[in-house]
Length: 186
Image 1 (cartoon, helix red, strand yellow):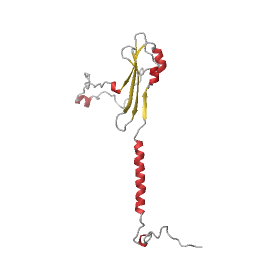
Image 2 (cartoon, one colour):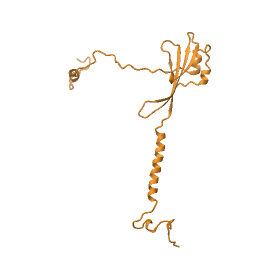
Image 3 (tube, one colour):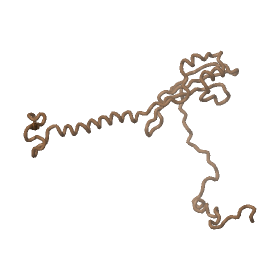
Image 4 (cartoon, one colour):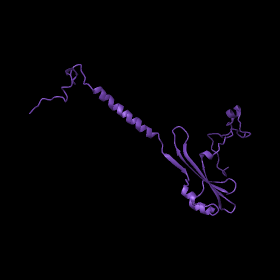
C-alpha cells in the first residue's frame, strides 16, 4: 500500500522555500552548514592548546625532605650519604669537601630554551675526616648570574690571506692518473 510522502514539519516551511521548489532554498540549511565547520574549528583550537604544552621532564637526582632528615650532621659519613642519596651530581672543585645533588623540572618550549620550573640543589658539606658538617638546600634564588667573557685567545698562524686561500692547495695532490708504487716495489 502506497502512502503519500510528506516532509517533516512541512506545515512550518512556506511553499516557496521547500527543497526542490524553484528559486527557493530550505531555511536553516546555511546555519547547519556553518555550524559543523565552526564546531570542528573550536575542537581543533581546544586540542591544539594541549599539543604545544610539553610534558615536564625531571632532570638530575631529586633529594626528598625525608632523605635530608635522615642525614645527621656530626654523625653521618660519606659512605652513609652515598648509600642514602647515591652518587653526587657534582663534587667540589678543589678536594672532596662538598657534594652537590642538583635537580630541576624542565619543560621544552618550541623555538626557545628549556623552561626551568623548579630547581633545587642539596649541598652536603664534609669535614677533613669525611663526616657531614652541614646540609644546605639551595634554590634558584640562591644562584649567582655569571657573565661570560666574549674575548678569544688569539692563535698565531691561523689567519690565511686571500692568496693562501686561492692557491693553498696547488701542489698538494699528486698526479691523478699515475699509480704510486707500493712500498718496497721500487
